[in-house]
Image 1 (cartoon, helix red, strand yellow):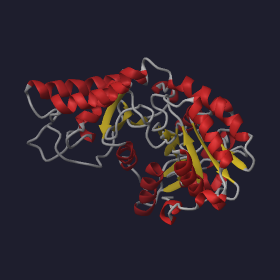
Image 2: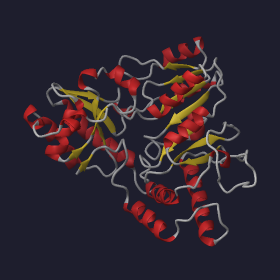
Image 3: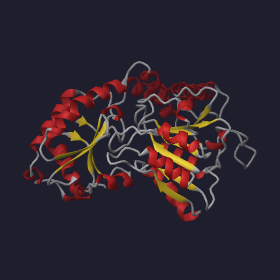
Image 4: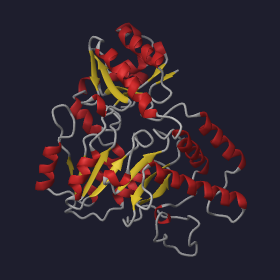
Length: 394
């Protein structure tokens, strides 16, 4: 299989990650923070080291703390629903935001009555910073959420510039780095973010089951979840201090062991350099294919390893199904949990887009095969593909 769905999860993982998860599962998969015996102490020490690695990765020492969660979706819900919202609150989102941001805000829109406004786009679908400045002036923000990288087009958003403007009004600033942590250099203080979220299983090359966020020191959040965490067990209240206030339940220590290994591995490789080279190689080849529509960043310098495309005469799911059947190529086809940007891409006639997302393990030979596959597609190739596959999951 040629795997080009790394925007969903990176695959394969580095060998050291598989080894770490297997070793931990076999020898030390105990409940961290719940026992005084050596294995439990070792697991707790490993988790502490992961927090330190993440702080170092974001140059956030003495600026932020790390909260670990089972997924980035839970992390985003904890941050968003942990705000002190009122009916007068105004939240801004970029049009590139994932449903993990949009849906919690939609709940708050219904339950509390907050206003959710969309940052403006220029004609090339970049964030219009001048128009954003004017929107903030007219309707000051209380909360601003920006994706570091679009999971549809690979556009690297100008988060720092947006957050600097938002801070003039005292807004809480959230960077969703699910598609960026470990790939881009994210300096906590430079970005002016109050929180940065991450998904272990994406650009950090760790397993499923571990995500979280960095939260600026001194910021408090309301608890969304409550339960046991081995701290103050005689109290029915959650601890009042971070990160324990936001962490409950048994942690997925094997997944954290995988993250521990991947963070060490990331120090030895340069995924961004690899992705840049591969995108520079792929995009010109795609532009030469007749009838192909390409959705990517407005400027090559703002391009990460994710692009989308469509072919005239085919729905996105049809292209994805043919690539799978005829060429054993795995891509994501449909709508990519980012409803707002699809409206701007005007891809309704295609029922979404075909997303191609690469990783540090992708090769030029694999991309050449993708180009050949796209060039060869015709209607006859749809024969024998079940209707349920063609409908897909949009």
